[in-house]
Length: 159
Image 1 (cartoon, helix red, strand yellow):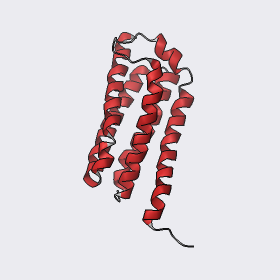
Image 2: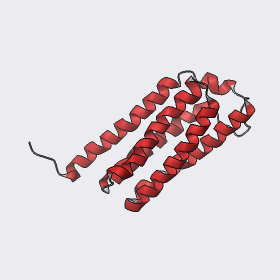
Image 3: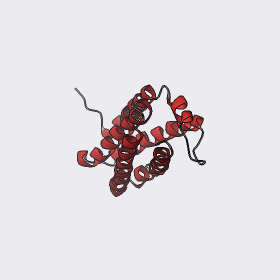
Image 4: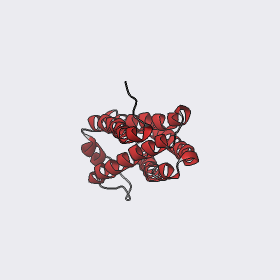
């Protein structure tokens, strides 16, 4: 059996990263079938975005997350370094079921704070080998920090 050189495998790897991130998105969408109803039924801060905005934002973010992982892989990231990325995907997948399906807003807040730390750690680890991979994590970190603030506001406003 002939092994393809890394350069030839690179586009296939991107498909793999897109598939992995799509799996996270599917978990979120399955757990969020009532998300619009739940979200609109909560007391929200004045700065809360409309529910329709989350889908487009997450679509863009998921593509950036996948491309970021792929660029880091191309830069020969190690398994230990990739653990940050993998843990981030797992935490990302876990937040939506906690918040929307379980209604566990406080637990979701704790979980997203951990996600913030992991995304920041991923960004720092990625920066060592690939500045573009790290840069693609910045919008993700910004959005999760915003989502953390929104989650915290919802916990306070919906005792």
